[in-house]
Length: 135
Image (cartoon, rainbow, N blue to C red):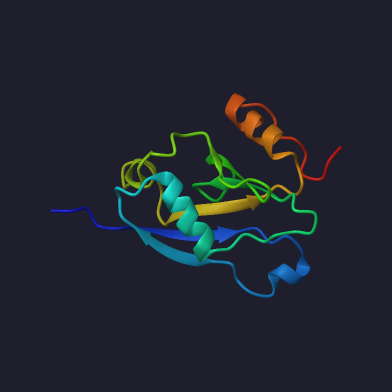
């Protein structure tokens, strides 16, 4: 018997007022055995991240939608996300009835043009995130 697919609510922050005209919310069902890096790729296709002029958008990848469970960083200038977990971590290890409130969420939080390397290092070390707006 195989495990049931994991249903995820995918969403992201808006980057400007005009970006609020349509909902970014999407739903995605993934196999429990799908690696995290593949889940994030599918989520970005289902809920495309806004690209900004200058090509320097930084996004936090959050599994709870409230900023408390960041698992990595996506940057417009990077080819692939940088994750705090092993990219081969399975979806069921993050989203299961034993370790999370429903609905299961994957949320992309816009961190403006903050240096994505500095954001990732702060997440990795448990330090304070760089300001969103510079400074």
